Image (cartoon, rainbow, N blue to C red):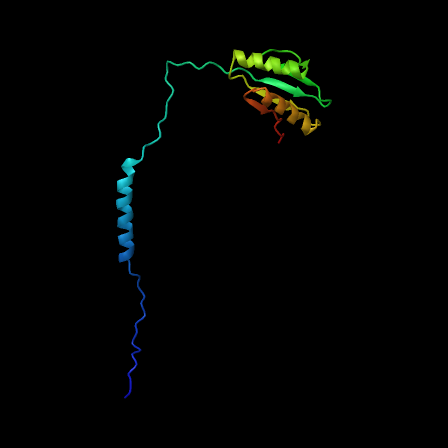
Length: 141
């Protein structure tokens, strides 16, 4: 008995797309069902009648190379005045009591030790002074 070997296998050169169509239809149904359930974000547009109060100019705390502190108030012209750490905390607490949105920026001399800047940041954080940032000079192009 001789077994006949079938070697008449045809090469399949087409892709069966029916399963892909089924998957696409299922995804379409899922998106159609879930799309109405999604709440779009609400945007509060400004109204014409409202006037926004200008924000207060930030108080600039200057840390000199020697570690001494000075304060410059941006809305008042003049040279910065020297101040101690205790006076600094009291001044900033008074400013923020009058205006809770009062910003404070720390401007450290480029040759001052980083430790001095961190000490001032730590002091202000311990005294619950809010809205504290660092002031940097932009690089010239």
